[in-house]
Length: 95
Image 1 (cartoon, one colour):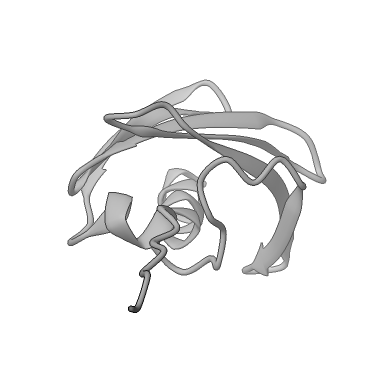
Image 2 (image 1 turned 45 degrees about the vertical axis):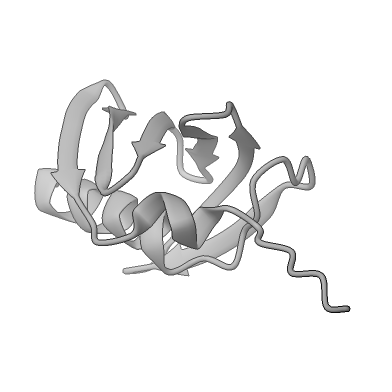
């Protein structure tokens, strides 16, 4: 079970198209489980909060390459290259 939770939180941190400060709830599925979450840019980190449809909540803090938090009451901590950058919307202005 922990392996599935870990895989789901890792997937959430890097493979979703969410942008920070997007208050709309997003949904994705992995290994037969569906998750709904929101992201908020807190300046030097991104906070991901959500729940699994079958029950259980998670809250992850993404700072740089490090992801930490709690998923279904289990502490999680792992690294993902460029995790925060992948969750932060970047706008480029051209002149």
